[in-house]
Every structure is written in structure tokens, then in C-alpha cells.
Length: 274
Image 1 (cartoon, one colour):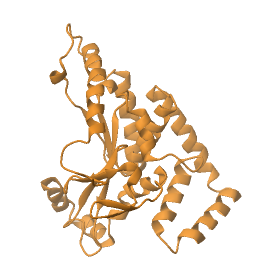
Image 2 (spheres, rainbow, N blue to C red; image 1 turned 45 degrees about the vertical axis):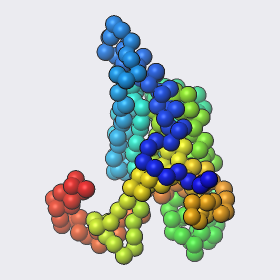
Image 3 (cartoon, one colour; image 1 turned 180 degrees about the vertical axis):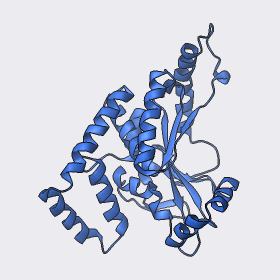
Image 4 (cartoon, rainbow, N blue to C red; image 1 turned 90 degrees about the horizontal axis):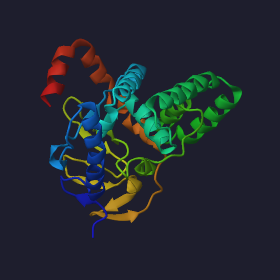
């Protein structure tokens, strides 16, 4: 038996989630659309909220969008919420606070904004600078990715997050909330992202590339594999480090940035064509 899943279908856990979520969606649609009869299972649509990258601007837009959807009673009609880069930070917070029984999007927003406002002021404290110095000395020689993640997490959270991606299964196992999908780009050093890029999908259940039909369980992401077998188990990373991976800053090269600054229309054509 292989320790990874090969195929282009959904995993069994996600199929089970969809079946349970359809019951929630059917009830929500009946209420929103004022239907006289219940929807059959094959009549229930699978709706996704898709967000884009864009720093604080995109996070703010996601705040407002989820609040509006809940105020309209439409959020329970959604089966998936997906995003990349900055919006994944709010996705993580949103799902984590749902696990902690914050049921209203407005409550989650208030907690999120309060934490971010306080943490931004604390970045200049002596303890924060001391901690950052120790972290930089420890990881700078290994990867600037770790340093960037630490800085970003410090700016967005009151403390280091110990939550893991697989922990978010608690928020979706009964179909009670939309399933989050986080995205990242797999790139190569000797190729421009305009010429080569592969989307990598992260869910609470598994991580993989749909292009190749290869997926591993989320708790096994980062472990060592050979010929489809797990050779060495590596402890699952905290989700704050995955947030750094989902940031598109690591898939952008300097030459790509220079090109985009002078050829935006051509770039837009290539991305929409792909």
C-alpha cells in the first residue's frame, strides 16, 4: 500500500464532507430562496468563495465579503473558501476561531482586528526585538523563508501559532463550515513564473498537485517519501510556517517584477490564457 494517493478524484474524507455539507447548503438555500419544498441531493449546487492575493487590501476585502455573506444568510450556502497569499492569513484565523466556537463572522472579525492592532504596536517592544534577534541568528543561515514567516506571524498574531493544518478537520468534519483550500505555487529557479508554474493545493485533509494527481495526508506533508512510501516521518509544521509558503512573495523573481512593470497587458493575457 502506498502512503500517498494517486488519482484525480476527491479523497474519501472530502467526499464525506461534501455529502454532509449538502444538507447544510440545502437548508440554507431553502431559506434564502424561500422555497416551498426541500431540495434533492442532486439539486444542491457546490458553491465556492474564491479570493485573490493583494496584501492588506485583499484581507480587508475578505473581511467585508464574509460579513456580507453571513448577514445575507448566504455563507451557509458555500461549500468551499479558497485563497492565496494574504487572504490565507484570514482564512486560517477564520477556521481556527470556528474551532474555538466563535460562530458569527462579525465576532471573528472583531477578535482578528483586535489581535492585529495590539500585535502591531508590540513589534517595537524590547522583548519582541530580542526574540526576533535570536530567531534570525538561528534560522538566517538556513532559510530566509523562516525569517520572513516569523516577521509576518509577529505582525499578524499576538503570539506564535501552534495550530496545524490537520487540526482544521475539527471545523469541517461534520460539514458544519466551508472547507478551506489554500494555494501555493511550485516554481523552478531556472524558469520564469511566466513560463513555468504549478498550483499546489492544501486542505485540512491532504496536500498535493492536481496536475500530477498526487496527494499526501496533510499531517505527512514535509515527510520524506520514496517510490510512494513514507521513509521518514517529520512532525507536521505549525500552520504559521505554511502561511509563509502560501505567500506569493516566494514565487516572484526580480526579473518577473521588472517585466510586469512594463508589460502588464501582455502578462494579463498570458495568465488568463493559462
